[in-house]
Image 1 (cartoon, each protein chain N blue to C red):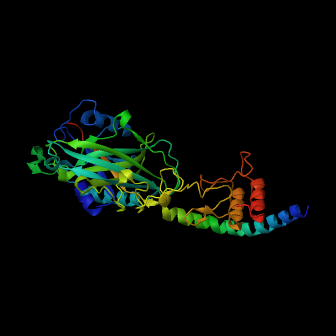
Image 2: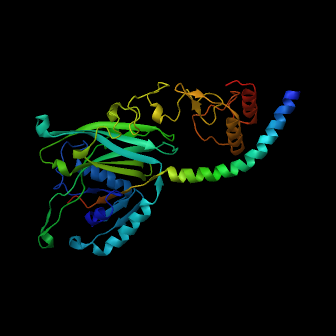
Image 3: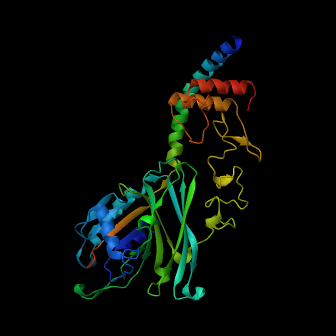
Length: 51
Length: 335
């Protein structure tokens, strides 16, 4: 019983902390995602006819 | 015009031009050297009608040109389009390495090119319908425009060969996770009629259903490097072709080196949510940081990395019950 109560206390404590951290992490992930992607080269395929 | 644009954008712009067979003698009907059939297939992708037709990244097109090469009025528009398209981000990195052997060095009538096209993901990306396309082009082919008062003007970046034209030549992409890499290798011969110094390989990453192009790379055949990461291991044998790893360590034996393996199975043990480890044997570290990260994943209902083993109850779902198991693991010191 004590173990179950301990677990719920831990769970609530961490969930409070995680809500704030979750927002920060979301913004950080967006920045990292944008920064980690490569810049794209441009590919042009030109058709001038066969004759 | 495109020769002017390539001077302005020497690394950003890659061009393949499909021209008259007089520039590119075709042979081997039905093979990847058959220019007319290649032209018909590729122009069919984009519904080419009027010419000249320029297709940008497989998506948008510009139709029409100027008589006798007087393109000056069109350059600004193309310049702005290239600027806009090159600002887009893509998860794909491409590199082309390999070995070029001249006919003289080979002691044969033909030169040979052995190539390795390395594809690296720097972000997760679904690989469904994604393929690599390969072309051989020749630049600066002399042409004489008699109808334009005898204008002499080089034809640029003329398609000489479509290496992935046939069904059994297609190169589907199999990687989908950040950090993964894949190498596509092959070779081809060059006859005497080609000027080797003007030959390049162009590689693109494209969607085979929409024909959208996600990345492009070009390398001259005479400057191919067999070992671009300079770790002493040729790309074809390198388990991390774009990362310096001379010792080729591969702790989990999956043929992907430790230096570039996003799913090292020694690290990816149940409960090691943030995939951290210590020591040379990659001892996974499971602690409160993993609890915090799993809680966030459960809250957002999404995996950050497909390598995670988070279904700790093995019941087919990842939820707060798995979080409870992880808390118990950490509290009881079971790592």
